[in-house]
Length: 258
Image (cartoon, rainbow, N blue to C red; front, side):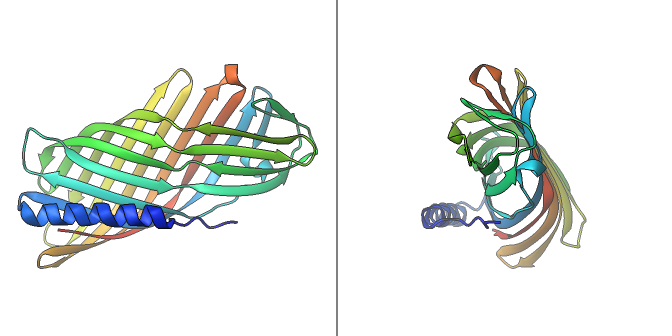
């Protein structure tokens, strides 16, 4: 299975963004900035296709994979302005399998017993604006997320040819988060939810994690281990597109806060 990596351009953008907020934080003492990089190792389940002409993820040959993530959170004590969270997930993988029944994907019907290669990319970036009505050893965050998908699915059959569909769009989502700090220990637990559903389509993203923060004077070093469940359902029967996927598994983050 191909392992995804962050390309050079993405790395430069991430580094530049982190440097900008770092400078901003040092110039404004009321600002807290946290940066985390991580790896998510989900299992895949679900199916692709329309109506009865579908194929399961197992049938298509998908297996577990590893994906890189990056998180930047910008928080302050000004009550009028929202806090900002940017969360990028680089999710791309491919698989090879043999169909056991017909699969309809856009304008092509792939036949049973046909060998197919499937390339799937669900890469996305969240831009979240949120407020923290409760913020002490227990924190509650509420806000809105705009999730920008740069998604693409390609199926190539040994007989039927190739079809590619893209989903390059913004999805508005409700955001909620909570955090519980265990005083005087550096240990904490947190959870987040991004979700929306409409017209048979649904996007849901849930995380739960345990973390440990070590105080180094001006900077806190952060380590996290957690679980993430991401569901993506796109039902566009008029366009002969159907995607119903679920990715879930452990993630690991390292970062700092200053």
